[in-house]
Length: 358
Ligand code: ATP
Ligand code: MG
Image 1 (cartoon, rainbow, N blue to C red):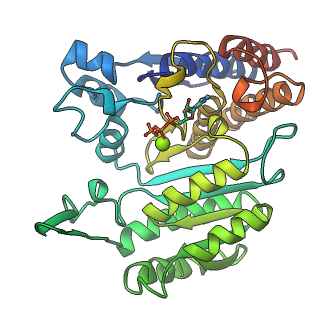
Image 2: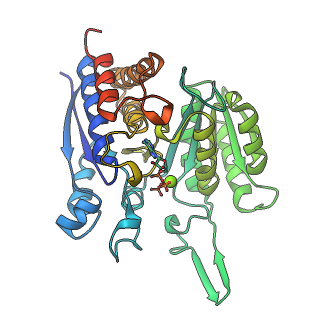
Image 3: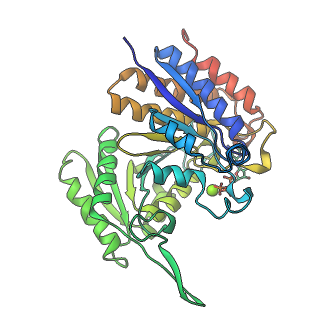
């Protein structure tokens, strides 16, 4: 008997109510084709939740998510929230923290037929999501950033063996399932203790993966290598801030923001989230590119397939990816990719492409 997977749907703000339902519709079609049953659970998040529950991330939502296999998270426009919500931790930050989603996995892959600086990139950045210099995410340092006296501000960075080891294992496992190459990115010549520890712990973990070829670069040198030869890289593992910056760079040189997916994962659960924001400038006009959200959904199924050792789940991911690639290669895309299809038209074309029997 096959299992029914239960997944949360959190539409969020801006273009979220356009791209999240598009992703759900395509995933449902791909799951039907692969014989996988999904139970979708819609939950409040963002501006609508402030109106209905007095908070952008209601306790009702986090409690319900704890019982699910994973979820699709739409973008949020937290700068438009009224205070105190605007200054508080935003919805995705709250969920990352609440569920300890320590690995942010961000692929950068060019599409055949789409414009890109690098037309044959196929790499994945694994970004440590809980430490480093990002104050709001520091587990130990609390606020992480402070001003001891007017005119002086201090940020603390933290790297631990424990957090580095767990993210390194995610990265090495991923490399093993791909082209078996892993690049450690750090700044161990300057941030000797912190990023030096990150590098040495990754190198220790590397001994458990003798089949994976490992190299390492300083973050500044890495930007040069990415722009010059992104196609040579497979999996890149790095700390929080370097990963944030590097993944925007990698996403842009391999295509556009509208196609860059991601998941945030712990050992137990995963959240699919497009790398872009809520795009309030184009919200409600049926022009947003749903590809980043759609492919984030495919990544979630890839992750579920590994966790549940269920090949039918990997077939769902494969079906979604192939549907998107085929539709774009056949000349249908939204205007950010140079096409003229609306969100609705593009989504309908992908649903048609992944339908059972095709
Ligand atoms: P955030 O802080 O929430 O990440 P941001 O300032 O990075 O927001 P985005 O919301 O990501 O901004 O939008 C940046 C630009 O990219 C905007 O012009 C937006 O319209 C465009 N954009 C973002 N996502 C998409 C998409 N899916 N389809 C088309 N255009 C998009
Ligand atoms: Mg942004």
